[in-house]
Length: 125
Ligand SMILES: [Zn+2]
Image (cartoon, rainbow, N blue to C red):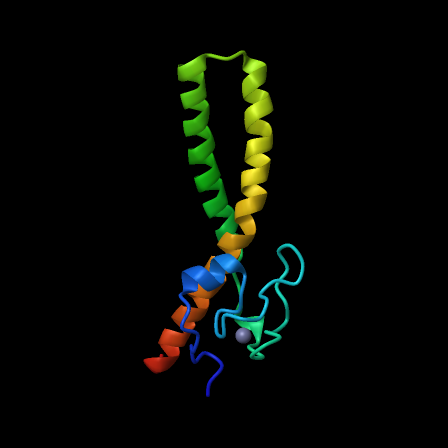
């Protein structure tokens, strides 16, 4: 059994978004808000392969940017509120969406990375 043998029946999407171990789908991936644990507490998978870098932050910027700009246009053209309403709405919205998405997206990228390494291992590469 190699450490990149994937044996979870759960998809990378569900384990990643839930912040679970990409191999067994049980153990916690995170030890803190964004810091990853050293290894899986359930199956012992060594998390040292993880190198997500700035990838999750880039996706968060794209997603939050599109969602907030679209919502701001909708509110402006539907109700034409005072400008302070936009500040009160979108300031906290940007903060909450960004913080809320960062961890699930980091988990997702790690899970996809694990699956790719598992596939490389099986093909001998
Ligand atoms: Zn595990």
